[in-house]
Image 1: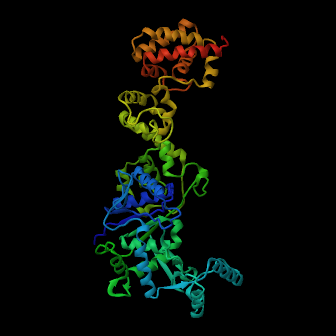
Image 2 (image 1 turned 45 degrees about the horizontal axis):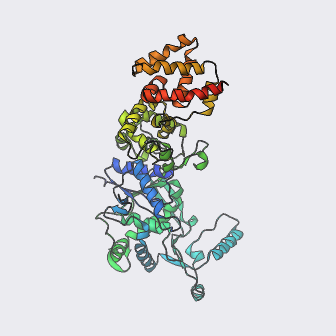
Image 3 (image 1 turned 60 degrees about the horizontal axis):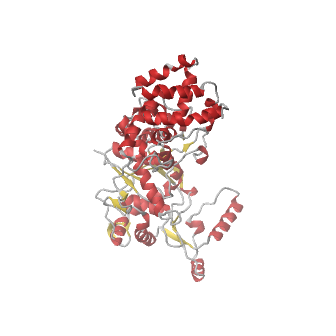
Length: 535
């Protein structure tokens, strides 16, 4: 019997930035779906109005698209900046599905699967303190048998105008066993699991309800997410069973199907059942084995983008945070990742995020790019799109692109991130150069610097402007001046590029052209004389 193609999902809250751990989870869902010919669904869980801004959602959509995880169904960002969606089982924003959660909650009440909780937060905390004082043990477990209100209490709270939240009834005893593709069979004792609130006192759905409803309604077959949500799983198993069970209001129809029809949302496809399996991913930690946070440096995909990491580098590296192909390779193409990835091979141990290794990966991939492709990828780091000084127009002029293509071979071997182009590009994309004070003091202050600059002016004034001729002319100066080549090259380097650290000298001079090179040599002479104390 063939196994149906999986429907996987990634469903973050739009907090404005995507943590690398979240993107690793999205990547694993994406790879599992693509490996098995399935569907990758992107859903926005924006029921928390305090966090769910339009800007944060836009940032999240842009980031996920940039990293290259193209989703089959979910919200989209249109060319005009508006939001759209693709897929037949939306909407894909939970804020637009509140009516569905309400219809489901009403049916759960009718089925006797819930009970009201009129306690205020203060009253609930007082109850917890009393329970802890009586048992001397850990956090008390909320169960209907020990927590459900009496009829008198319900009447009293109703009279006081206390709105009730709604709790899901979970079994009082026994155990629940979940098949986890990473952890194997995971068991919980129901006596240790509290009945969760599924509807707040203001009528809004909580995560366990909304998430479970959408997974069932949208046909998600494998729930792959971080291990921090493992504890939620037993409660969702109960909800999944109730959702695909009979509707108390309509015989012969599943509860979720009746609710979907009531609110006019797309029906489930034939054959869709409750999620069949779970996969809880290990945490992503820093090299110190502590939870990855901003103290470790960059932790969001948006920051890695601004710093000039390639999306294919991130896809490759994040895939290896917990999984590895059987042959031990590390450099993998997208096609190889899809062909080889297996959720069952993901380890259970926390995965350490090594920025140095990521940097090395990125440098290797930058060196593999062709000149034209790398030049095109550098443009956003020169036109202000990704920050930094604006050095080219948007789009660049033909002349700017010509200079950029000429610069690429000079810096490609030196770069580990795309934003490092800002270190080298100003000398070539600006008419004038700013002399670095430290380089001036270090280089121009030495004997022979003025003479080297003057001699370079003279020999470069009439030389054929080819790399070979430029090199021959400058290499002839040490013998003429009676100094080592370094004492010729460094003053010239600082004069024409502004810094003692630059791309190769002869190639830089050739790229700058005769006019700019001679102008910069002339402009540097006063600074060289001043550094020598010549006034």
